[in-house]
Length: 204
Length: 204
DNA sequence: CTGCACCTCGTACATTTGTTCACTAGAACA
DNA sequence: TGTTCTAGTGAACAAATGTACGAGGTGCAG
Image (cartoon, rainbow over all chains, first blue to last red; front, top):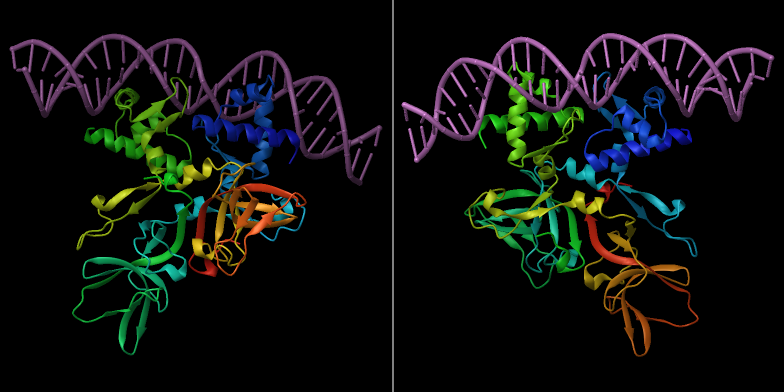
């Protein structure tokens, strides 16, 4: 991709972010400092040929840039930083967490606020947000949210010869047996944990 | 809001989600089953007067619905679930975590992968992703990422009469004094923690 | 040198699109 | 009863917008 093409793409992105819709060809021309709309039109055609964007022919402000999705690649993950190199150097980036995409695909999922210390040994502390993906069944040994006799808890699911148990991850707590008399329901499985540094950072 | 207005708003939302840009007035007319653009125009004016959407006058396909931002409100947070009620009932939703917005505002931030057990007592375990917001200074008692003699660590920052110390959150580790001879740099402060249930869920 | 891809200009044209005006009609309300 | 809000039609207009054509320029690989 040439320098100009990248600049145009960035202009489109910025414009879209600011206004919420695509720029018109003439707006792009003005933003790029060219006076003819056909200049931009030609560049757009080239960009589309390269698969960098999509435009519905004849329809105003219908640009969809690939970068818009590319931007969605998420937040860089950095690991194994060798001594002396700057932290954000390209070589250090191990990948990206596409959190936005993850969230978009998280249909029906929700956060539960952790209440007690029963899952402490798993590093799940009070005040943490655990992301629950609703499901009806859960496999042995997995952590999930359950409703037992109306009460909602986060525990490890265990099914053995002696029946079903909800296991805490803390020696101060006892495993909870689930009997036939109990009303028991799997709410969902534990997928992710979110924790904020300080209370003031919470969004509630 | 009237029934028709809600239908129009939904149509706009669906169209935007499918195409990536707003519908034109005539497209809305067709979608709503009316034959005159002025019908839609009048409805849009009413919706705008009620603050349900924004349109840049004279500019094609420039609708910005409030619902579009509403969608961005994030993932619901559920707490204090009373016995018997369904989990996802409206009454249970305590709020939303606008993760997307958080990420959008997280310019320059990145994730570090936690390596050892030195912050175990703070519930920060190996394999966790900690979100680091770059900054040059950090206040006393806060957790941050530091580079000490080329090595990057996550510790609690402590400045006292005896100098600067990097404190672990684990009795098996010793506080690390920072002397004049050390090359020391604050990388950023610890803002958020992310953890995934299983390794297979990682994005790397 | 000769294509070839890229960038630029200016003009012109056909559509798309937002907007306005005039008129009708039902429902809610004082 | 009349008034107001909402919804709808149809026609017409002006501006915004995408597009096409012709012309010129640059730089680079063959």
